[in-house]
Length: 150
Length: 236
Image (tube, chains in turn orange, green):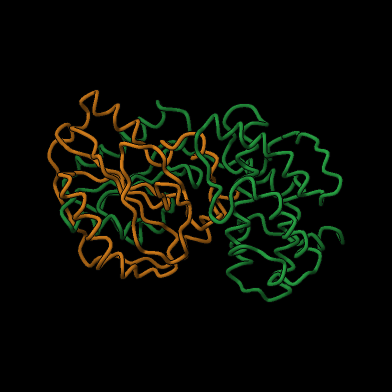
């Protein structure tokens, strides 16, 4: 019931859309290298904190699983994350898909931003940190990005 | 999420976004989105259920077959949170008679929290303080709840982040006091409505409002759907 109330309140927030929907036609999925970009406010190396309005990003090594979730908002469940990080960043599931040949491979590098941004124009993400994060994934030869919110 | 997906797509990466607020995805129009009416915080739906998670991922990646966008598809299964059904947890008794009852409660939960951490290897406590420091922070909030000036009790950081550390500590401890994986928000409702520390944070939130500590502190110290005024309850 709580989520319905939160969703109703958040549905009224403004959003920024591009004039034209950008479009990339990917290779066959079985040949694609996949990375996750989450807005869960994840960190590594023990830092468990993000601040409201922070439009920066963190680079996550998929070779480790020592992620911390530091999103500032209290308005979502965290016990699912504690029990199984795949419910937010499904790296084990992607590894299994790669082993099955459904996807080509899993990137060693993933990215976290933080959602629930008070500035709906997301100017910093659009013009600076978003392209910078994309560049890191392109250098990792990533083809497809799966985005997961909380 | 929608705008971020478009930024990545514009940079040359094909994207698939899981959607949690449908109206926001409709407004921001990312190239491809799978709307999942799952509990907030659980975008893959079910912790510990790899079969279900694979089904969601298959549905998401299936959107890459579309030839043009925006594409917005609803996942056919919905999952509700369980905030209306708080966990049933028995808190172990402690012999801390010289402590505030809420601090004693938190001290009693420390070994329980450690069991959860050993089992899952993950914590969301640590924004400001360690789990071991949580009990003494509870007492600081109890002093605020009882009327002391919040700026002079010695809080070691942002009250909302300290409140989060306390709430997250209790939620994680509850994982070792209940059976199986709890439904979404069950531990949250248990903390806020069934524990002494939850009552302290609720009363401290009211005190912070009265002291005009700032709307950020009083808005984010507890989930918005858990906010209530204990004085109203006692007058009811």
